[in-house]
Image (cartoon, rainbow, N blue to C red; front, side):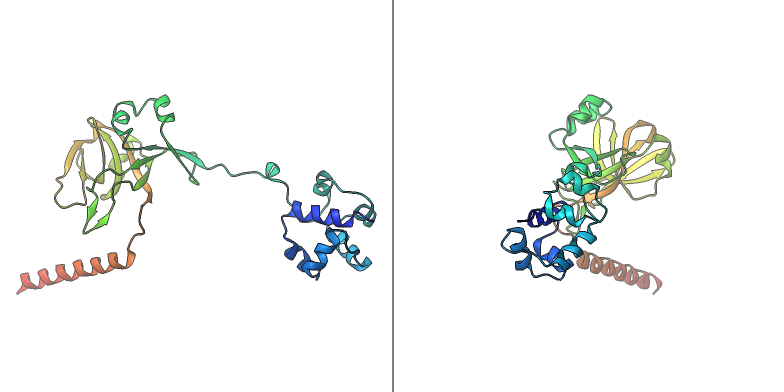
Length: 252
């Protein structure tokens, strides 16, 4: 009895191929391949040569020796390695401010040991940049039943103090300022930061830019529900129509 069956089974394992996928490579039936692997049948010499050549293994080795994984990895051919040999991409760990940690964060935001203890979110973002997650806790950023609801999570990229004035008006930000942690839209007027909610009944908050301790520009959003994109577009068209009607009335 040859070692052919054991060896092709090990090749499949290293390559990550199912019996069906392996069989199709060499115009075999899956049942036939299963019979080879279980030693219930021996292949034709043409099949042995085809498989040996494909993986650059000598016929002697594939028939007379039980090949090790290390030996298989040395052979040419499109063989993959086991998980421990695969170079894994490292995602960035992003500290996240939650309802339970928000009050402490206001005073300890610049303490590295405290930030390290925050819950984290792992995302495929640029690890060279600094990010912070924030869990929405109120309805200030909702409008017409759209927007951000409690338990939604926004991910912000840290903005240096000297760049704040250059941000576009309406940018979503998370701000630590004067003993508060605020999630709103930013508008710059002279040396002040105006933080505006989307909810029409919430008044603007105005702070000197110099008083801002931290500012994170929102880059990513995780909602607890699927946004209704179609309805949102209808709302925008309706608002445009209303504005046009108002303009017509003024001209009359």
